[in-house]
Length: 143
Image 1 (tube, rainbow, N blue to C red):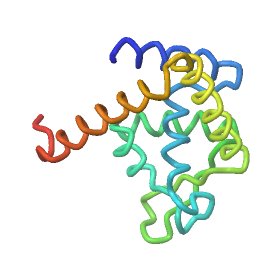
Image 2: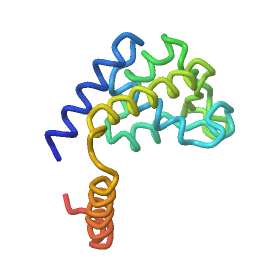
Image 3: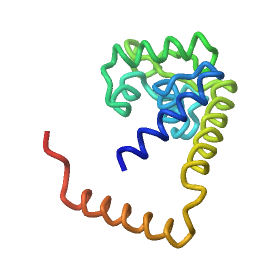
């Protein structure tokens, strides 16, 4: 599984290079896009929340957002509830980038798993879902 994940990630990263999107930026864009209304200041995600969701330091999230803002994929907006906080809005170009990222991911997955039969795919998904359910049922992971 680890080998498959590494190969898929690497191939996806290579395929995103022509678009000027790094894997870290792709993760940030996808995370922002999962917030309903992420294009409006009232619903946009705070920079600190983005850092938490990405499991990175706030300073690292700032660096990622700086690059995304420079590329016109996101905009910063002051948080109306907290003057010290910044919200990140996904732009129209950012939404288009999220669509491209999804297409690239789908293409890479299809190339990697394309020869897997539907029956084998069903078994694989059942095993992975079962393992995930057992993991979640065990409670929060220990650090």
